[in-house]
Image 1 (tube, rainbow over the protein chains, first blue to last red):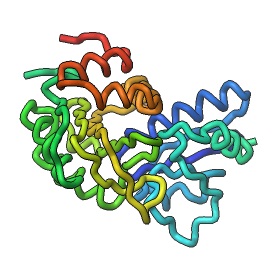
Image 2 (image 1 turned 180 degrees about the vertical axis):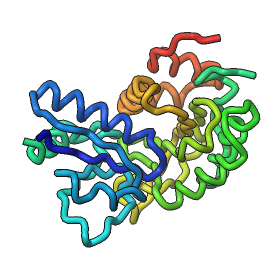
Image 3 (image 1 turned 90 degrees about the vertical axis):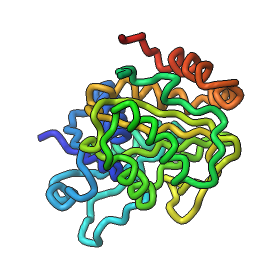
Length: 95
Length: 158
């Protein structure tokens, strides 16, 4: 089964949409099969256990202690700084 | 009523503003006046900006991209302000700190998946320090519109 990455946003779905597209394109190029899911912070509970890695676009958010899924900060998707490293880190969790 | 995603009507050059709220109100009222957003949009953006700030640390010239849920939007648009003086925004990457922002893109997105190329182009545009420099130096809203259209690869839609 393809692994799953959850992209979480806080302010609506603008920035996370861009991150989702970048992740999909990058993983397709790297031949990594994965499913990219987009959700709002408030919807986290329904997804947290079902994904292999979480990308957090709302950096100000704190997630409940019960979430043990690896968490990656999504800021590089917006600033471009460290983007390659961030994508590689996401990839590690999807292989 | 205008239906362009980006137009000089939605751009303020050298905005004099003391804080984040004033900036969101000035730009949001323009979006509202042209029918792009609902009454609930401006208060919703101000509230969200307080919880999840959108100031992006980019270098010498920082940018903020306030936005909120699609339910407050009628049709997509981007309102833009260059600021006469930098204003402190919460740092999206570090909620404990603020950063000085000089250019604000207030996003009103209705169907982000349909606009993903535009959003991607916008993000790539503000990752380019030279473009930010040019935008800050632009004389008026018409010039800002012209520069952004070039970089956002927007085609005129009437």
